[in-house]
Structures are given as C-alpha cells and as structure tokens.
Image 1 (cartoon, rainbow over the protein chains, first blue to last red):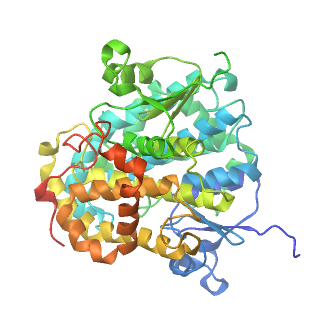
Image 2 (image 1 turned 45 degrees about the vertical axis):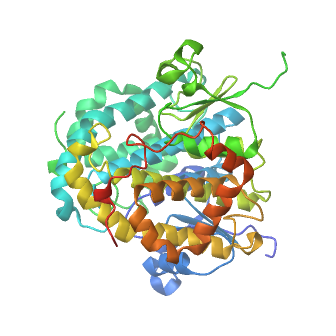
Image 3 (image 1 turned 90 degrees about the vertical axis):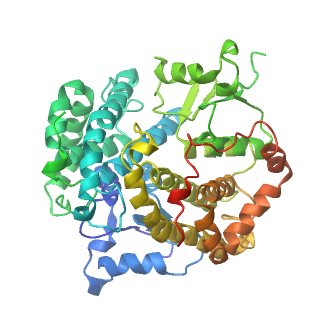
Length: 250
Length: 250
C-alpha cells in the first residue's frame, strides 16, 4: 500500500453543480475513480465542513483561494481550468499534440470567463447579496448579455469548431474528444437551463456547438452520469439559474 | 535564417496597459526581445488595425477570442495567464519544481479573476456601455468590492506569501521570483491607482504584499521599463481607472 497512488479527492460545495461540475465531467468521462468529499456525510468527513476545513487549514504549500480544490496526496490544487487539465491526463482527455494542448487551455479559460459573465447576469453587484437585492441591476444586465455577449461567445466556439478540420468540425481541438469539449457541453447545458428562450432563438446560428453538445450528452459514461444521483439538479444557488424575468427574448 | 527562432509578437490594444501589461512585464523582466505590434505605426503594420486583422483572419488552427494574443511563427495563443506562462520559460521566470509551477498557474488565474472584479466595479452592467451610463450601479458595486472582496483577496495573497518559507515570504511560489510575482505587482499597482484611499487604509494589513510590490518595482529591468515610454500611463479606458467617487473610505 505504501506505493499506491493517492486517490483523487474533489472538494466542492455539496449542493450545487457550480464550477465543481466541470471537474466531475472529466472524472466521469475518463472513468477515473474519485472521491467527491463534499458529498460524503459529515460523520464520514464530508459536507460543507470538509470544504471549509480545507480552505482554512495551515498546511505546507500554497493554499487554495476557493473551491473546487483537488487533493492528491500532499498536492492541493485550485482553479477549475487547471484542475480539469490536471485530471485530463489520467482521464485520457488531453490532446496529443503540444499546440493542441495549448489551445485546449486557451479555450478552457475562455469557457471559464463566460461562466463568470453568465453568473453575473443575476449577481451584477455583489456575491454577498441575494439576487432579489440586485434584481433591478440584473434586469438591466441580462438583456445586454443576451443581445451582445451570448451570440458573440457562442459564435466564437462555432468558429473554432468550423476551423478544426482535424476533428471533422465535431470537437474543439485536435482529432478526438478532449476535456474542453466537456466544458463547452456544461456551459451550453447551463445556459440552456438559465436562458431557454434566448438559447432557443439563437440555436439556428450555432449548429456545430449544438451538435457537440448532443454528442457529449450521448456518450455512454456521460449519459449514465447525467441519469445518476451523482448529477445534482440545477437550482437557484448555483451559477446557472432560471429566472424567467432575465430570459429576455432577443 | 531558415532555422532562426521566430520572434515573439504581442498583439494588444495600443492605448491601454490592460491585460497586455501582464505579458509585457514578463518580457521586460526576462530581457526577452518582443515586438509590441499594436504600438507600431499603422504604416508599419501596427495599430488597432493589426489587432483587428489578427482577430478576424481565417488562419489554420484555433482562433483567439480576444487580445492579448501572442504570435510566434504559426502559433497564435490567447488568454493572458497562458501567454504569461508560455513566455515565462524563455524569460527564466518559471519555478523549477513541478508542484511550484502548478501553484504559479493557480495563483496567476486567481490574479486574473481579480482583474475581472476590479474592472467590473466601473462596468457592472455591460462592457458596451460607457461608465457614465452605468455609474449608478457602479456606485453600488464599488463600496461592496472595497469592503468585502479587496481585503479578502489581498489577505489571500498575504497568506500565500506567509506560507512560502522556501521564498523567505518574499515571493509567492518557490525560492525565486516568478511570473506570478510580476502579475501581483501589476494588480497592486493598478488597484493603488484606481482606489488610492481604500488601498492606503488597507496597507497595514498586507505588509508582505506591499514588500513584494516594492521589490518588483525596484528590480533594474522593471524600474527601467516603468520609466520608459514603453510603459503606458493609466487612463480612463483601461481596467484600472481612478474615479474618485468609487474610491469609498472603508
């Protein structure tokens, strides 16, 4: 046992998909065993208490600022894009060529930028305030996001897919599925939950993005995961929230 | 000449420090030659036109979404954190140990997250609107940023410095200066420009962060750069803007 590889432990809030979901999808598609620590019972060392303890402990090395955090032996690693890349190796979801790996990182960071923008449509003033206490500002931000940013960002990923001849315009980078395709899947799933009217209106403009989304959803391991109790439902505490009043028609 | 290494070309808007500045600092401290394409005259292929052309061209491979973009031969690479890491190798600013490199990436992404938050205090509604057209919302967001986020984020970097015994609590990761120290320098410089009253009030709580800031500013190559015409002044078009009405006392 002394030489056994330490297990992958994911530390993330137990009640939301949030940024942790991008990491879970890499584990699930790769068939890589992991412990979702926050979702263990508190008496087994899980729950919110486990996340708070990890964030506050004075262990050697660089502390994390916020979850998700990956723990693997003595390594603690934060930042969603970085964790996803780190797990993508053992998951078999890293592009083979060096320049494709760089571009996967570039695209992953662009997805995460869009996650911030998507979150801030319902939280334009402060994370510490309830939506209801910044609804007036949200009602101003959301239509501008839908009109200006959503088509631009989805159009960008449509263009990336169209430019990837090696992947038959079906994956973002290289010739095979990579972790960044899973991230775009999650982003589109979340935006479709939050803004169903806007996304339906935009759908005809983004056939490649939607085809990738459907192809990821149909992969056996992802389909099994989505149908399992491990996949948390969307709710009004996470990044992607369905507030009908913010889902303005285009 | 056929085997010469292609030059590093940075594509970024010519009139602001912006995100491009994080890249410039790595080049400058490393003494790595680079071409700041946007700042060349238009008749020499520079200016805003060069940036727009790069963003719109249909070249093979993954297109960039937004500047800064690094071009090196046929490689075009976007996303500030990724470009900085890529240049840090030839600049001699990458930590030596693998786990330190991972943590440098983690911290770099955390700096860039804070850049978004710092920008959005004056643009809480939309990038496409002028500040004056979202000033009411900015006046609500800025004091909450100053009260809640600024101490938390600076406190985090203070804690990271304090936990790095290998660096004598003087650098963020490992035993020597790395690219992420330059990024924290630029973040603190920008926040001090934008929010001088708030930062002065907070200063006593963050001695290690301010010592790192002063040490970076005093490095010969950085000092020479900051005194040169290559360093653009702050203005009211970039990320860090000094609007006195947003610089609320704590």
